[in-house]
Length: 91
Image (cartoon, rainbow, N blue to C red):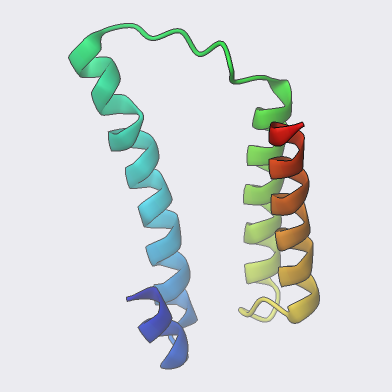
C-alpha cells in the first residue's frame, strides 16, 4: 500500500502508513509478549539504541517536512544511519 501511494504521489498517505506501522509494531509486537509472559528484562537495549531511534525519527520527520518529499541525498543519509547501526550491532 505504501508503494502504491508513493507511485500515485500521495506522499502523506505513504508516510502515514509507515509511521502507523511502526507504532503498531512497537505497541503490539513489543507489548503483547509482555502482557502474555509478564515482565521481560531488556538487557540488550542500550543508550546507543535509544539515540539511533530518536535520531532517525527526528531526521525522517525533518526530511519529510521539507518540500514534502525525501530527496536522494536525504535517503542516502537515512540508509547510512541504518548501515552504521547494523554494523554497530554486528561488531
